[in-house]
Amino acid sequence: MTGKLLDDCFLHDKDRLTHAEALSILTSRLGPVVGVEQVVLAEAAGRILAETMTAPRDIPAHTNAAVDGYAFAAADYDADNGGRFALVGRAAAGHAFRGSLAQGQAVRILTGAVMPDGADTVAMQEDVRLDAGCVTIPAGLKPGANRRLAGEDVAGGSQLIEASSRLRPQDVAALAAAGAGEVRCYKRLKVAVISTGDELLHSGEPFAEGRVYDANAPMIGALAGIAGHPVTQLGVLPDKVALVREKLKEAAAQFDVVITSGGASRGEEDHIVKTVDALGSLKLWQLAIKPGRPMSFGQIGDCAFLGLPGNPVAVFVCFLLYAIPVLTLLGGGRWREPRRYQLPAAFTMPKRKMGRREFLRGLLLPGPEDQLTVKPYSRDGSGLISSLRASDGFIEVGETIEAIHEGQAVNFIPYSEFGIFT
Image (cartoon, rainbow, N blue to C red; front, side, top):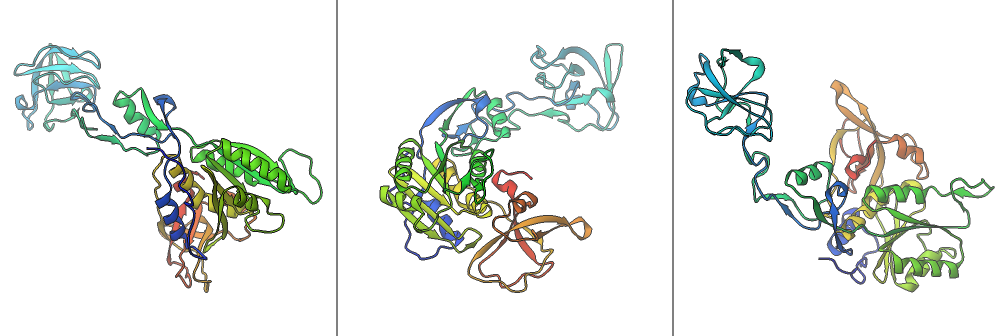
């Protein structure tokens, strides 16, 4: 079932949230806010399934040959000495042999053809000898060799794919094998991305002294697309409170989610934060993480608002850790915590500030005996887009870890866990 965004769903009563606490709030309070539509199967990859699909019949529906060869009954065959069978027909995929095999008979069969009545084993064509209308099968075959049983892949009536799953190419194949031509999926979220600041330039505009190009909005759009939700870029808003208010009010009426970057505090030029607070409700989250400590979550009516930090690295980290779960849940999906892999550290961190979780940009390196190791990118600046391009994932350092020594096992989260392939 779909519903509206809960009032004050981003409210919390702590001055500072740990990573786990932030995720717990998001995953426990957010649910689908979009409707459902029929989607043709050819266009369903990446969409979120709205209902659990069951197999209407066994897959495969019939016991069939796994190879090109000759089908016969194992009961008529001497596994120690082989056997000789009279050929009585042919079976091909889509063209079954009509009738039943008598004792000592075999059928020429092609891959995928239904096994004839009375046959349970297939000899590969390259292993046999043909002469005078008979086939000689060598010793050594086990009963049931080279056949695929009905229901071997999926039993009829069993669950095929669970509701709220994001459909992968292999899931589309499973649905196609079950005969589904269309599936019911959640509609995609309508997501808007807004940048603010008099200093920002669009890519492609002539450079001007004292200005910077907006790298965050295109990156946010690309990340949201990976999460399955294409975005509408609403451009750069100047630091003018009346215009910001007008545009945000407009956007909230048209979109399910509005995402901004920068201006995540209450400075005199942070008009986005003040405007969201005035039009709806805003919660400034102080997160015990690095990078990306300041974030804001809120809502204007039924529109969710996500205010990301301004530095590109912090935007990237916070989008993967928090915005993707929000978009997934609001879009009807089920959030799966990214898997951590234990890898030896190829670095030392003799002393660190405890009480916060760090997400270092990590590079995979070959270690002793071809075991993978991981080390942080050499520079730690939160404005270094080059670090995101060079790294393979996050080295996650927990709140209670005092130091890291070379060779110590550390948590590594590859970007592929978020759908980003390096």
